[in-house]
Length: 247
Image 1 (cartoon, rainbow, N blue to C red):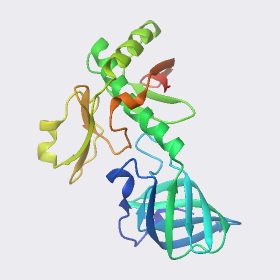
Image 2: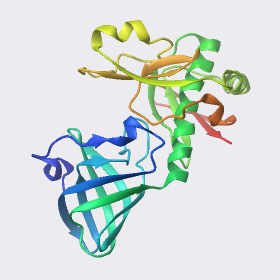
Image 3: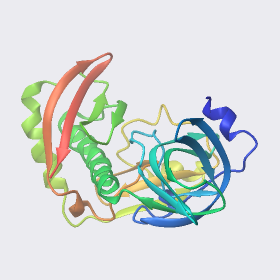
Image 4: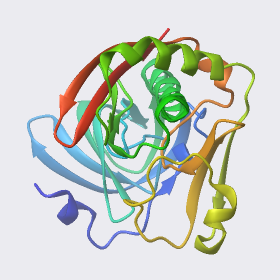
């Protein structure tokens, strides 16, 4: 079943995960339900606490509960600003008002990993100069960032050391800006060439580290990341993949 067809004709979903990455629950109303097979359904809510797969992040997981029903959220997708939840029905009928509850342990790890990824961008730039990103995955089981550069394995200890030196009590600020103000607020952004045209841009700034367009979930303070470990390196098409983790 195509996600575009499931979302067609519905209004944009209110994205609670962008308003407050620390929100663990939210109330919502179910707008559309489509059965796939067995106990599996696609559900479209009017608002979502769940971040969809994309933007360098894995899909959030969790639960949807309402009067007489409960479902386990397996994955979350997005089409034209509409969030579509794929879930397994545990009991009851999916309809009406619903409370969404996040798998917070997984989400918080992703938040720490995503902020760490931005810090690694800066640590690498300090060693090699500005390096463009090709892609990233800020989530378990193995987070990574791909760079358009040939990075020697001997640099990994220096990248790790530099990244951890950038952590500490640094505020992470999220704001929205108009396109004409973008150049005034961004700094240290590794790649703006792939940035799509938009009416507003969401900027994530790690104070004194970098500020870049990002639609992901982040911690409020870089100290929450903990410690960054560079765990491996791999050649990929067009560049180098750096694997990392947090503890």
